[in-house]
Length: 449
Image 1 (cartoon, one colour):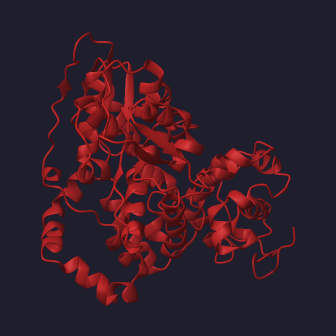
Image 2 (image 1 turned 180 degrees about the horizontal axis):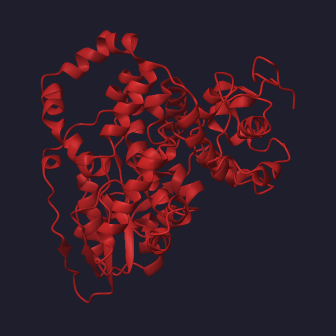
Image 3 (image 1 turned 180 degrees about the vertical axis):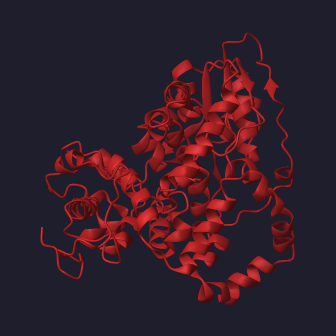
């Protein structure tokens, strides 16, 4: 593999900043990469940008060079780590079993601690991580956002393109703003919801942050499906963010604090499982043992908590449906299931959602080409790296539309926002729903309009 001096600033200067001593990428994990290049075809950032350094193989080379003092953690290297979506497709593809997920997870906090960002970048990142992981803070902004939408200002802002000229990142944030639902202004779910019929399990449900405010109907549907299938549901009121957003962007201390809060909120609930219906959140929740491995007070608690975490679809496929399912339409319904990266690659969940959806009478599932390719959402990636995300979103929607499906099933709020945006940009009105909503409709005998 040939690396040009323009791509990596190689130097013997010992004073240049590199990784610090707080868990840098493990050289043993780096050495498992044989640079075969199998990851290149499945890496979304490489497919869009087309540069070696924006591929998993290239980033691993950079990690090794920084570890060895041959490259600085600076302008020539850090942006290549930022360009990674963290979709983990390379982990699924790699024939050598390279644990790129652990390598990039170790690198991101290093970048955040040791790479001096510009003032605009610092401000924008501070805005994101001070707002999105805290539902109560975000809820304060709901009323202004609702007024903004009702007055038609969003259409005006997008038509003028003024915000995009000032800040592509802020424009990207505005462009995925969903319609504000009225029930986002309050928490409608009680703390304990009894099972229908014989109780089979006692489960906890995590509400999420964006999911809680903008997709509360998905949470409500998830609870109804669980109770209809013999689950007593517990919804701890003190639960906060799962830590996915800060964890995926190297905000280590914030992620650890949020993980501790989540563990504490479920500690006395006595649940058999902890259920999550958002793909990115689920992957992070299952990583709590790793996130808190250095915390002597929470290490074992984190492992025990993570062992109970199940994606809603994973759980229902495991325990089986007991509620009767009815057709969603008076005629056969063709739909396509959108694989969220942190379900498919992170949690290895792909068959279960399809098994559940196929149990609904009259449903036919179609498969898109490049089903494993990221849609470009990737947590907050579409707000931090909008140009790459735009191309990926366009490709994803084209592939989904080419199936001819009448409905898209998506199990992650970020994916849903990204796909909805690009459906609108292409002038297509194809409904997109969470599989839990579809199961809920089917169990209640509600027909799709």
